[in-house]
Length: 210
Length: 208
Image 1 (cartoon, rainbow over the protein chains, first blue to last red):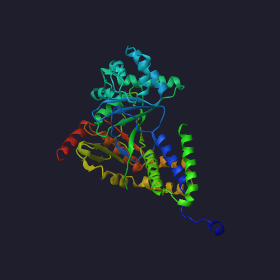
Image 2 (cartoon, one colour):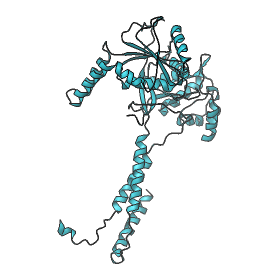
Image 3 (cartoon, rainbow over the protein chains, first blue to last red):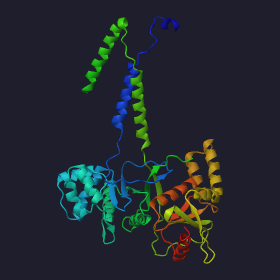
Image 4 (cartoon, rainbow over the protein chains, first blue to last red):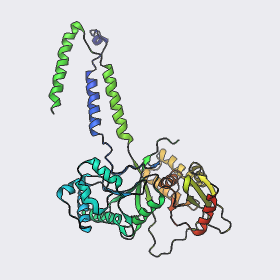
């Protein structure tokens, strides 16, 4: 070993490969990083010690924000496309192909069904944000229970495409939402038509707890 | 794709310079660049793994076909928790006895200690199983079933959680989380607060 080292006069090593590698990794992580998707609603979820990860597919999420507004979301685009078709059918509105595509690519939806076509006509995210902010969420009172329809339609479409299986259900509630609001949603979950008795509640990982 | 040839040229250029540098020695110190690269690398690694919301599984009992709600009051070793406004918890032990039952007040900080204290036999059992799991005497599946069994024992604590109307959703998550922490397997979230219980709560609330 010393014999090989001797001829080298300079002790500094060539760092180029290391830099190459480091930047390669940086690029990789930058490109693969999944940015937090643009949400129609900001929800501050409570924290818990649970380490169960959130499923990334076949998951229907019902979001309840701090003001008690309710949003619907589904992970798989195929199912989303079918759901909006069926919802258009049930609520008697027409959607163009462009509007359908937009719906499939969006995330959480918290617009009463009657306003959906107008909402899906909006081009820019800022305009949609504006509407989302003014919206009162999906109606879920007894007289006009559109949330139940969303859940039911999702269930029907998902189970027909997957051989009778039910989609996973998650409830994402803001920590400051009133329990009575959340309870109303849970009551809808447990209702006789949808019968969801097992669901997940989305929480943040508790940071410091010793 | 477009970048690849450019990078190759850059590398070639570097090598040329190095050959000449043997005479003049115009090497650049790359240490700060490496520092920066690794800093960015660390940052991206950390941020990508940090943001992971977790989930809390909650199973509600299937509502009974008949309208008769199940009688839960006769269960032994029960604890009824009322989640009320301002992050306060009121609780009483065992079955409701008219005239005798008194509510005690606690909060989310102290409730964990209390639950662990009340559920000691179960926790001890689970700890022994966890030890066996660590020593690889039993496998994961066996541990889970033993843990389940321990949580269903007669002396295991049974908790009924009744959030009041003005409780926050955070309160419910917190308390369900506490159930997980203190190894309580038998718990139910109910929204039916009986009128006599409500009277007690209202009386206690005046003292807040």
